[in-house]
Amino acid sequence: MIGKVLIANRGEIALRVARTCRELGIRTVAAHSTDDRDSAAVRYCDEAIQIGPAPARRSYLNIAALAEAALRTGADAVHPGYGFLSEDPDFAEVCEDNGIVFIGPPARVMARLGDKIAARALMAEAGLPMLPGSPDPVSSPEEALKVAGDIGYPVVIKAAAGGGGRGMRLVRESAEMPAAFNETRSAAQDLFGDGRVFIERYLTGSRHVEIQVLADRHGDVVHLGERDCSAQRRYQKLVEESPAPALPAGLVKEMADAALRGAAAAGYVGAGTVEFLVDDAGHFYFLEVNCRIQVEHPVTEMVYGVDLVREQLRIAAGRRLSWRQEDLTPRGHAIECRVNAEDVGRGFTPAPGILDVFAPPAGPFVRVDTHGYPGYRIPASYDSLLAKLIVWGRRRDEALSRMDRALAEFRITGVPTTVNFLREIIRSPSYRAARHDTNLVQHLLAGRTAAGHTNGSDS
Image (spheres, rainbow, N blue to C red):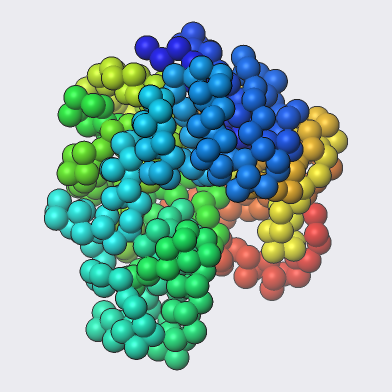
């Protein structure tokens, strides 16, 4: 088994990984920037090592610094968490070359699935349904106009190296295409160092549903059901739940079977997520594969009773999966709300600052994954995620009531947060009736504007 893990991340996920390591008797090293020297993860881990100044490119995105930190501290393995270098095949390869276990899929698998064009081709070959789109990179506005004309508007331009909602641009009509194409390609080059883009039909009024998979190095692959992630803003998820409400059981099984085929075809190893879009007619289409632990993984843990980080560690150590497919049975309903330090009234502007009061909710079947504490200074250099609030109930209506109660109990002062807006989402009639799609948040925000919500504070 692995003896020491360097956690190449920060915030709540660093703390969450460290806790499972402690339960398994694995020592932990918190790799941190200067801004995070007083973080909860640094305080909790057995050791800490500073890897650079606050800017992520000089710390959490610095492959050389993280590899050196792992070697200096004698870490057997590196857990990349999510974001930062978690899906960077170069980082995985550097770890492998230095005899350090990368807790994630092999570099070659990550490279292929991280290239969205290559991933589409691989998944299509495995029989997963695809939205109409360009099979190859689109190289000019003229070619983009032709492709979009063939498949029909609206379309979305996507960066081949993108993912997680970044590097995407919706185009509703041909007049928008030339500028949108050039801007997206330029942004892709700046963000990912890869200016290749492709075009795909945009599915209006769809739901975003993903399948959690686990695969070991012995060829075993299982799924742990689905999560609905349709409540999102600008492709960034805000509320997730499992199981996905109001989906026929037969459709979920088809999606799960497709995800297993895709993972097997890719030679996947570790925890991963196969994401789909579902239209109002009940057809589903491949979106992408996330080669990492997801932000929303706790809802699956609550429903299946499986510690996904523990399984990641076991798989990385060469162990077989703890579970067979027939052993994995969902129970009840779980919902997660992402509490961000953002000012909803000012367009969700990140709101760094000091937490004067930070009192998370509690009670039966309530879980809070957070790195926040009273007096904590939220740095301006990183993502605004402050906490993940997860609840479980025997039924969806029970889970919704518990989430509403827990959000109402969450006391945070010092910075504005999204707590009240999250309550608006879960209280909205369309969400409660499971009639929502990826346009839900947009509609709620339009209603706020019409009602004159201009107050800067929302917490």
